[in-house]
Amino acid sequence: MTLEKKVLLVEDEALIRVIGTDALEEAGYDVLEAGSADEALEILEAYSEVLVLFTDIRMPGSLNGLELARIVHERWPKMKLLLTSGDTWPSENEIPDDGRFLPKPYRVETLRREIDEMTRNCSPTT
Image (tube, rainbow, N blue to C red; front, top):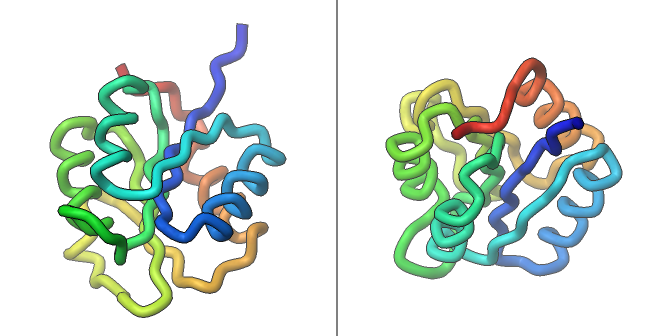
C-alpha cells in the first residue's frame, strides 16, 4: 500500500488555486484546497497527515499566511511550509522552521520541484 502525499494549498484567488491544484495532482500529490487560513485550520484538524502547507501570505480573514504558518508549525511541527506572494517578501527569520518562499508569479514546474524536494523521504505526520 502506498501512502498518498497530501498537500494543503491555501489561496484566496480561485483561478490560482485551481492551477496549483491541477499541477500538483498531475505530479502525483493528493491536494486539499482552502480559500483562507481559517478554512485551512479546519481542514488540518480533519487531515493531520498533510505533508506540506503551501499558502499565499496575503489573504482575507482573521489570519494571513505567515500567521497560519506559525500556528501550523506549533501544532504540526513535522509539516513542511512553503509560502508564496506577489507583493510580500518575508525574511528567512519570518518563516517558521526551515520553511521556504516561492515568489509569484511562479511556474508550475518550479512549484512541483519545490514540493518534490520538500517531500522527499517524508512520511505523513501523525
